[in-house]
Image (cartoon, rainbow, N blue to C red; front, side, top):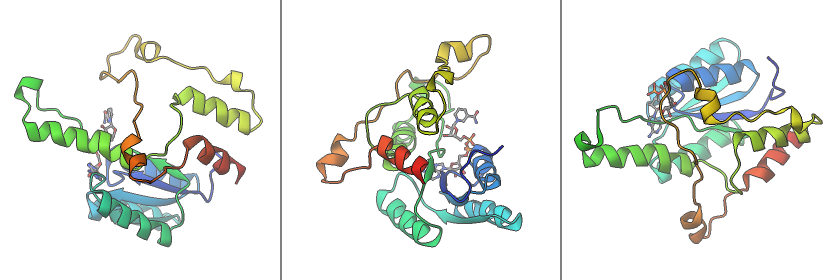
Length: 198
Ligand SMILES: NC(=O)c1ccc[n+]([C@@H]2O[C@H](COP(=O)([O-])OP(=O)(O)OC[C@H]3O[C@@H](n4cnc5c(N)ncnc54)[C@H](O)[C@@H]3O)[C@@H](O)[C@H]2O)c1
């Protein structure tokens, strides 16, 4: 597949194994330069080595996405060594699998929120809430395709006839606290336009 993203720098969090690793390999096969970020630094480097051994460009970095200072430091180093990030795959996550809420320990709850919410928030752009279909339509529009060709599929439609894990109906994050510090995240829509104009 040629997605037209050759030469772009892609950051994949949780790229040491499983889905994140596959994201890294897939994006590398598209010609992207990969920043593999993971709590497991050794695993991140192994993924990067696999890519470079196949002729691609990648580097692995150890960082905990819930630790803003360590994350900022790792991203700074990664961007100076690989290049400014064009594509961000917020893959790192953790699913609490120990059973019911009544069995959950406080530290399990805290860790769930820290990794899956705060961690994702830490590496995400700002802007108005958008569904995947909104983004896909905009990409089509900016690329000269008819946005009508994008067919939104609701979670209910997608799940019809199969069983899958419950998904949130809305995944919008408030950046108010971040903005209150004086830091302004780049609007995601602007980033998309700039990216497609490259
Ligand atoms: N596998 C599934 O069926 C499934 C289903 C729904 C959603 N997901 C989501 O997809 C993503 C990947 O799933 P997976 O099965 O490949 O998970 P996995 O547990 O196999 O891999 C997750 C990777 O993220 C890294 N990671 C975890 N916490 C981190 C942190 N704080 N900072 C940096 N890196 C961290 C881990 O070290 C690991 O390499 C997760 O967000 C998961 O919740 C997976």
